[in-house]
Image 1: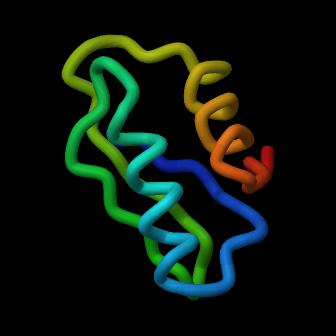
Image 2: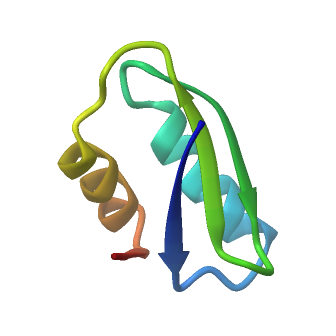
Image 3: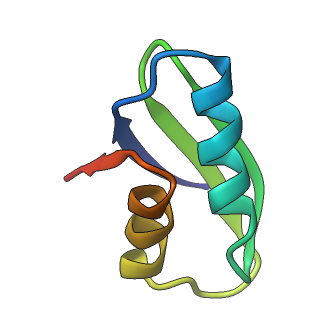
Length: 66
């Protein structure tokens, strides 16, 4: 499982939007996001570029914390 920290989510709608953005990436499955901690975990079924993950989160309106 991979994980990233996401900044800017404040409600379940935010969680759903970020989950949808990550799940849409080719090779990503089983996305789970904890709103309180801001941590998203996901499984890669094939290699996914970290820039693509960050880009999907930014496109959804949130920020990836490095």
